[in-house]
Length: 302
Picture 1: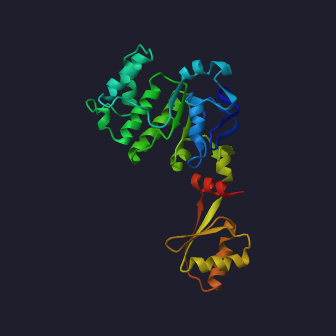
Picture 2: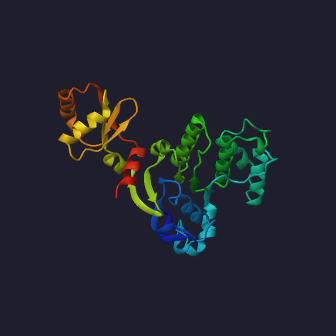
Picture 3: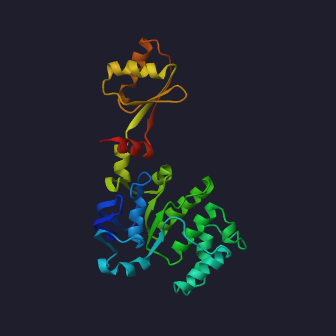
């Protein structure tokens, strides 16, 4: 497979902490790779290193078939959206993008119109940037990354500030760009349910280091099912079940809900035990854990 991004022992040390511990990573052509981690885990540090906004403390990075020493040249084939891009407050979307088009030496005026339509900002032709909502600003930032016709997008929280419809639109756009234009995408978002819908690969980062790197297929196979019970006394039900299953992993949730993360295959026995202890089981169902469930479980595993 063709390598789009390669890092070898890439690291960044700040005065007070290790922003990114030595990282060996490859992003391959056609992938949509999601970077997942808590705030401060090292995601933004990694993205800023790739974009050239931070200089690494050690290691190296390379893009496409360029040597590590040609990173600046290689970045011209990439689109970066790191945090919220800066635009001119008094200018419209077209005026802002046309300024950057001229600055970057893009000859085609159609490029501006094309990307404005792609992110659904064409219906606001006279609206100045200072009047934009957070969601509109994110759309304009994404439009800027697309203007050069990149082979790879690096997007840090591209759906930040968007409503449900806007998030759905961005998801559809990214999937379309990946499928129809073969654009490789590296993305982060705190909305893990959205990442689960678009990503083909998941890289989990905690405290500046990678703790898991799996494909969508591997995630599906590993993602355990859980047993959800609606009972009249969930805390008491948990104590009763712990007597029969000493390794029971559970959480007591609102609305009289008890969630079991193991022993899902023992549902019939669990129901019988609870009934024997006069605990009323109103409902029992099997659920497949989400990406968020997987991440939270991964984060607490020693």
